[in-house]
Amino acid sequence: MRARVFVTLKPSVFDPQGRTIAEALHSLGYNGVEDVRQGKYFELDLATTEAAQAKALAAEVADKLLANPVIESYRIEVG
Amino acid sequence: MKFAVIVFPGSNCDHDAFHAATHVLGQSAELIWHKDTDLKGADFVILPGGFAHGDYLRTGAMARFSPIMREVKAFAERGGPVLGICNGFQILLEAGLLPGAMLRNRGLKYRCEHVYVRVEQTDTPVTCGAHVGQVLRIPIGHGEGNYYAPPDVLERIEANRQVVLRYTTADGQLDDDANPNGSVHAIAGLCSERRNVVGMMPHPERAAEPALGCVDGLVILESIVKAFATA
Image (tube, rainbow over all chains, first blue to last red; front, side, top):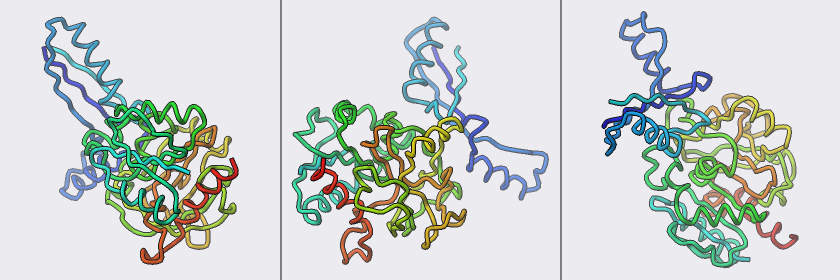
């Protein structure tokens, strides 16, 4: 089963990369894009076929390694 | 005294730190591989600069799981002095030995230049030979030195006087233009609550001999020996 982990900087943390991309889009005329937050995306191929197990394992590795809880938060999708 | 310089795969200031400890300070030192599990009787541990494990995920993210880090943590918990320089500072943050985290530099650029830092505290093993307010000219070289801590943590850090170095102008004034990476409160160096663990982004080992064009790093390095002698 596949788990997808989306890691982003917390809303309270300034994202200089996202801001630069937003400014680049504005320079291309996309003024309707008000802001951009850049993050990281991980696809985990897991041995389990149980969604609950997959989610728990993905959360464990996200807590342990994929995200730094001081600055980042994450969201998990499975299946 | 004896220094341990930890070598991670991707460390690249390990030999500079070793050279500073041995040839500049005249002390003994040993390079210790990250898979080792023994600090070999060292009195002081240096986590050097570089790109430990490639820093592919986040700076320092993998290094904290290296076997030697268990020993470094235990050493720090016993009150042993530890200095993380640049990538070493990032590793100390990821390992939870210091509070906060590093973000990409505010301007997104890798900054490699001399900066000025002001000594804020002198009751640490790396600043005991300095005086409060002393301004040091020391080089930096990093892309992720934008120190961040949530407001409540930042308040605690300041209340505990844990900020050891701040980026300033040459005459010691806080100025946003003198902050090379956007660090909150212009933090360039930080110590633990017990004050024995210190992280700093500037490289004192790159400013320790006249041939390097600057010797202000000696204030940091000689403090280490002084702290050991007076402990």
